[in-house]
Length: 401
Image (cartoon, rainbow, N blue to C red; front, side):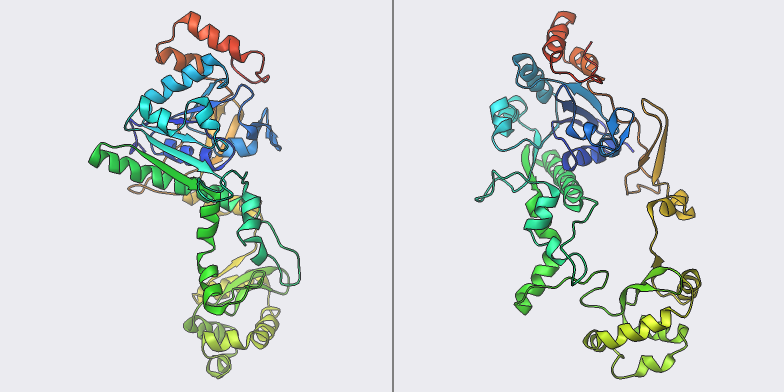
């Protein structure tokens, strides 16, 4: 996929949101240069590991070249600024005030490249009393109400383990960057784009907050169920659980027929979704009894045949082994990466029927430092000075010589 070919991204971000953003840009053809500290992105050291790198790092850093710089040294700052001068897009996720102290904030970048699209990713945004607060995904899940509505009604608040706020913030950042690039094509002007975990979390809570405003009371936890729909949750078949999604009245009628209880479709207590929500305990008792009458796989075949949404509760291994996964082309395999044979999850988009094909596996720390510095016009002596500045701090995986 070459839609963004010719655009250079200089990526100072770390951990998950920023790297996912720039990985998506790289998938679509942008050149991405990842600037890392001498010991590399924090997630390189998060277990579990594949060789020397953590799996979180491997999941969001393909299609990038890695340059290791000590941004606190004069040599590192000079190299960073020279990189920015060549960049169409800059992405950073430093703490408040850090980019300015390093001379690579938006104002500094715009002085070097007036039409630069500069994206800042933060925990709580640049305004408000918490603008200097550190924000991790789980912190925002807790702070913005997500954990208060996740889990079983009588259980503790639960963290979503897939870091949805981090990942969605990366997607929002990529969307904002692309909009700013289109604007630049039209006006010739650069732009500062801001994305924050707080804003993303509040965005996720939109319809929950809408319900709160209308109802005036705190929403409860629903487990796998849905406040507005019934039956719409996990049920136990005779052997294993499955998810049943009866989202409208025609599906309810179809379910009642498939269950051998057609009379329930016209029962005034259950005829409409509003009726079923109002009489939820009775509906759940009836459906639970019905579902226990057959095995999971038999139910899935029957319900699918009738056009009723349902799904098994699968583990990751089952998902990966499913024939639909192979057909989707969502898994890409690097056969000869530094990490050996390496699987990665591809970008969840198609363009003209084709999925963007990852071009290069995640890099080693500083793997391309010499190459990129030479492209910036550094001679051998200047490159050596930059590498010498790194050596005292570099981790064992860093390519600094």
